[in-house]
Length: 303
Image 1 (cartoon, rainbow, N blue to C red):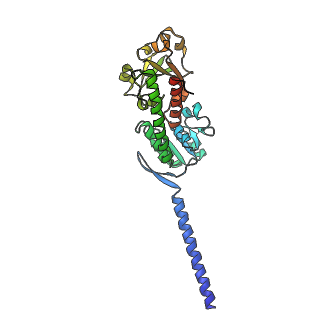
Image 2: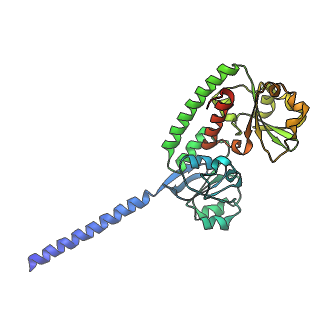
Image 3: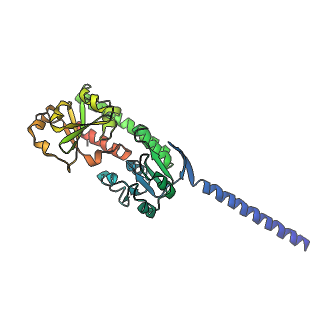
């Protein structure tokens, strides 16, 4: 009898130890379900594999490129034709739509640090906020990768993108000349916006990655602030050898038929490449891939 009691006791102890080990392993697994991202304002515990992300900024393309599911997004991103597939199940929300965001049950929120209700958003889900322009545009993609635990994938994309952009840029320079200048503008109501080298519209690719030249007059007014508004009639004073026109069809486009526009040298030479502004706003990874392809086809006629 004593022998059987001893065996029973051993079995019970073994079962208890097994349960304790299972609990410890479960605790370890649970801990691995989150990571800590060192944000601008301090560490934020975020999901290691976020399933339902709300993006309240211009980073939707980075998340789509990394294969992250977006359930809520800003209206500008939702209106981007290039994001249509990636955002087909995403609802349009803003930082003011707290109830709607709660209904979406996000496990991560990403936005810009100047938004209101940031404290309330943090109560809904882990929230990471960025200052626009604090990181350069490629490092920003890597930062998004860190937040969603895909830094390796983001870094690999950046390295590949830089290589592709350099190769295409070299070919473009060989074709148009080292000293050829390129101006990037976007139309608005009775005015234009000139862009520097870090305000989307493909400017990062043209000026930073490819090293193409910006007209001195554009550099004087738009480089430091990022963009600069001018009246329509003085556009010719700022247009270089080539013009990238980010065209908003919903705004005034009558200038396209105006004599003063068609007398601009770049226009007369057929050196105007027109892009849909809705696809050209941002400098996220998905947009950059699109813009790079656009420039390759525009300047080189590649297919």
